[in-house]
Image (cartoon, rainbow, N blue to C red; front, side):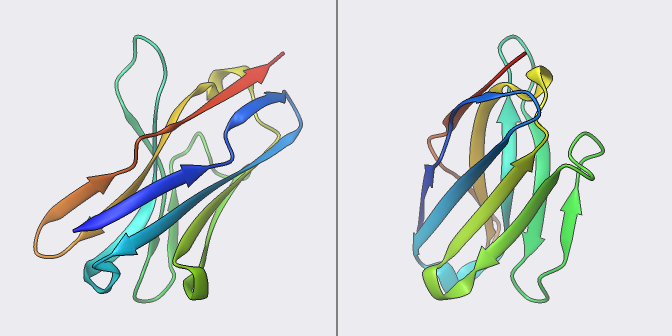
Length: 117
C-alpha cells in the first residue's frame, strides 16, 4: 500500500505561482512513477504531469508545458508541482498519483487550486 498526502493548494492570482507537494509513504519501493491529475467542476479528470522513479524523466500535458514543472525530492519521498503563470482555467482539484507495482494506481485526496483573474 502507498499513501499520498497533498499540500500547497489554495488561491492564487493569474500570472503568479503556486507550489504543490505530495508526500508518499508506505511501500514506496513499488512506485514506478508519480505525478498529478486534476479535475475541474463538470469536467473529466485530466492528467497534468508525471515523473519516472527510475530515471527521473518528466512528461507534461500540453496545457502544462512551459508553465508547470514536476520534480522529486527522493530523500523526502516527495513530488512537487511548481505552477508558474497559472491561468483561471487551471482551477481544479489536483490529485497526486502513484503508479505502483504490480498494477496499482494510488490517488491522494486532492487539493483545491483556484486561480483568480
